[in-house]
Length: 310
Image 1: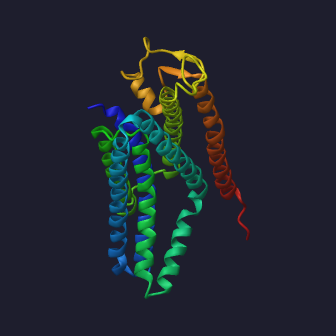
Image 2: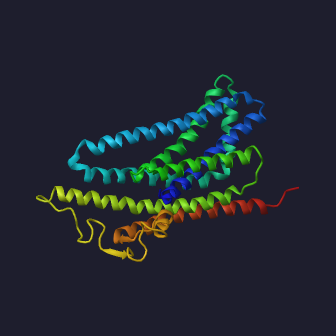
């Protein structure tokens, strides 16, 4: 089993799982503080429903994916990479948005969740449904992002699934440690480190998207060769000239190249357009993410250094 494929799914599931665990932990703490522990069962029900919903989404996508790939055998060479582009593109957009949004909302997460819980408890008749919905949506949102990433490369191997399971176990352990046993964890540092890893994993996914896009154009070009040639380059179809070939020195299917491919988006063959989009992603999305970290750090520093009025 190639456990390198488990690393990206582990990182994403662990990070997304900890976010969901924080919401669940805050909700349980609020209910305990408000002496409404009888509503805990709705919290656990929301967690179960969110996980079940994520699994059902994965099963649905797997069924649709299988049927689409074999619906038109002559177009399999076009359909498979096109689906990789579709799932990969949606995964990049959602994961990038959540990475930046969660960083910006981190300081207000607790107050926002507590405010929602207090509003729910104010209406005793609808409190259970509101709490169930809040938790279910939080878990389902994180689970959906993980499912999208899992399907972005169209290869749901045993290793990638094991990464998901390990990530869920890790997130559960962190949640229990924080809220049950009072374990002290620097969550700000945790999310920063995991965010950097996630950023690099998404950047590698961007490179894969364009590889699939090139494969789709090449397949279309073969199908339409009597009419039009869609390829604009001799070394690739739409990616331009080859700028990097390290297949004999550091192949990306063997260690340590496969580890660098998993964590940093490394490829032993890189074409010009892939280099451009990789750098553009890191500069654009990566730069915005790092700026958001600095903003949060500055706000935290200002809060600590503000003089206390007497």
